[in-house]
Length: 388
Image (cartoon, rainbow, N blue to C red):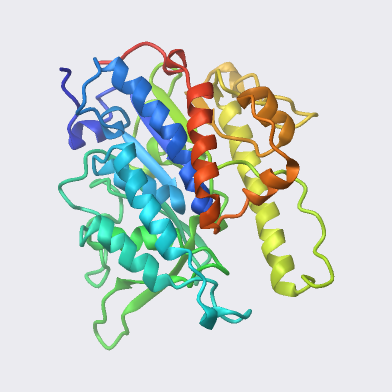
C-alpha cells in the first residue's frame, strides 16, 4: 500500500504538489457536504489502490472550514473517515438544534451554545491547536466581533501567532482548545451566542484580554476557498506554497446554494430581527458568489459554473496564468438545476424548505441529495494525474 505524507510533510512547501480542501458554512446543511465528500473519498481511495486505511487527510495538505465546515474539517484533519464524521455529525445535529421553550423571543439566541460546547468536546476532547495527532493542516475561519477582524486560525507551527507572541502576556494560538476554535467558527448570530476566548493573560496591573468570536460566515469567507488560497500562498501566513495549475489544487465543497430570491417578509414576520436575518442571508450569498467567481478567475476549473448571465463563467485566468486548479462541488437548490444535473424532480416548496440551516427533519433528504450529487458530479479525471 502507498505511503502517505506526515503532518510536517503536508505543510512543507518543498513537498509538491499541494492540495487544499475547503468546506463551506451552512448549519445542518453540512450533511449535504458529507454526501459529496463521501464520493471524493471513494474516488481518491481508489487512486491509492483501494487502501482501507486511506483518509482524506492523506491526500489534502490543508483542510479549511467555516462554521459547520470547520466541524467537518477539524474531524477530517485528525484522520477520521467521512463515515466516522457523518456519525458524529448526525448526533451533534439532533442534539444541538433543539429549540427550548425557554429561548423564545428576540433577546436570546435561538439555540443553547452550551450544547454545542458539550458536543464538540465529545468529538475533539481537550486537544489544543498544537496537538500532535493532527494528520494534516487545518484552517478554521472565525471572526472576532469586538474588533471586527476576521481570524483565520491554523495549526501551522510557523504561523506568526502560533507560538508565544511578542509580549509575554499573549496566549499563543497553539494553546487554544480545538473545540473552542471550532465553536467560535460556528457561533452564528441569532442562532448561537458568541464564543469568548481568552487571548491575553493579566500582568502588570492590566486585565486579561478576551475576544468575542462569531461565525466565520459573517466574514466574506463563508466559502473559505479564497482565504485558504491566500493563507497557503501569501508570505505573511508562512506556508509559502508555490502556485500553478500543476502545483496547487483547491477542492471546494458547498452546503447547497439557496435560490437567490430572498423575497419580502410578510406583515407577521415584519420585525427588524427577521429583516436583519434575511439581509445577512443575502449578503452571505453575494459573498459566496464573489468568492466562487474570483476562484474561477485565478484558476483552471473543469467544474466551473455560470456565475451570472452577464459574466457567465469567470474566465480566462487572470493574466493568462492560473494560480491553481480548482474544483467546486455544490447543489443548487433550484428546480431546473436539480432536474438537469441530478435527474431529480423536486418542487420549489420542497427545495425552499431545505434552505433552512437549523431543521433536523431535513437531514435525511439533505443526506440523500448530497450522496446523489457526489455520485453524479465528482469525477476521477477532475483530480488530474495521480500523485506520489
